[in-house]
Image 1: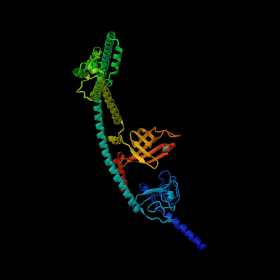
Image 2: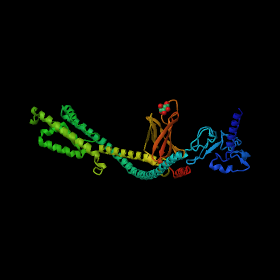
Image 3: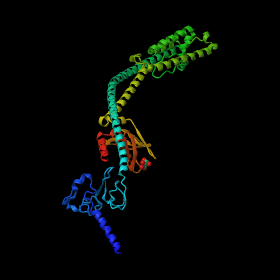
Image 4: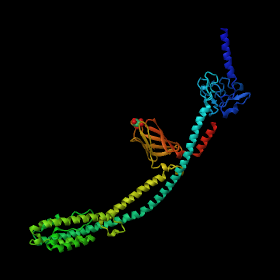
Length: 488
Ligand code: MAN
């Protein structure tokens, strides 16, 4: 029994000896070493209390800030212990981890009471960590190079777009002027046509009246004339050939028909005259010689055939006419020589071209006025989209535009925040029992533009990380290199 008490006392003494013999600088970080130099008194570092220096690292917490026990766990809730970790990099752990039976420092210095035997594996860990650090530095340097390319591309595109918008703005004025002129011409043509139509109508009414007076069966003749009218292309005035006119020509024989066709061809060149001429002929050709050989019953079939051929010739001619006119360049057809259809088609082409240019100007203007970062570094991200596919969804982020989760909108681009490091997308699809969906894209330096690590920290409030060369900086590279040097 006496022996046991002796062993116990020895063990306590050994332990006390171990703690008591702890150097006052044990567990002190390199920046604070100077405050732990041997002296009569120790000034607690972060509180206005002075204690005898002999009480530093005596395993009893005296300073309210715990700074008198850097190497023990006595001030467990507030103190910090510094692991030297030679071969790797020094690090702080909570004082409560000291001598708790778990190896926290890679050099094992936190477990000096030998409750557990810790291996010093700082060298291996250090080598691995340096390898990773070097890779990170390499990736960063690569990112910085790509950033330069993005800046170059951004500035080039910015200048090109500035030139383009200047050119487009210059092109707007003459087109607007041309549209105004065309509008006037179209109005003119319309009123001319109205006048002409009215004149023709009056004239026709007069003729009909005259014919009615001189011939009782004029109604039938009139009906036949109406039936034989051609359906002409929209907006294009066409020569009318009356059946009676044809019959008249036929009654005079083939030569006359040829002449008549030639007349019609000439009329195509001046359509206003054409209409007048054909109307002129109405009255003159209404009487048909029923005894003409060519028109006897045997020849009715030939006549039908002939009329069909003439009709198809006219419709082919009309189609060609309608097709060619709109595509004929202006230098071949002067505006004042165009008919109403041609002018209207030209007007709508000009209006379309104006609209296209105005839209393009608006688009470019919006882009040039956006926050494109220093040296337009973000401009290469404009009009681009990036995807991240997880087990559940594909997330798409189109910087400056919109973001989505599959088909669900996560919002429209709102602004850059957090010193240009976060892109905010707001007002996405309403969440069931929650807010409208929104997304924060947190950017950091990387060798490529790439999304990763999507989270939904709040219901329908999403975050996603975006690696981009645009966020790499020379200053941060210096910090990385410094950290790497310190870890040696
Ligand atoms: C969908 C997704 C989820 C979201 C729920 C909310 O399932 O958009 O991200 O949390 O809706 O109801």
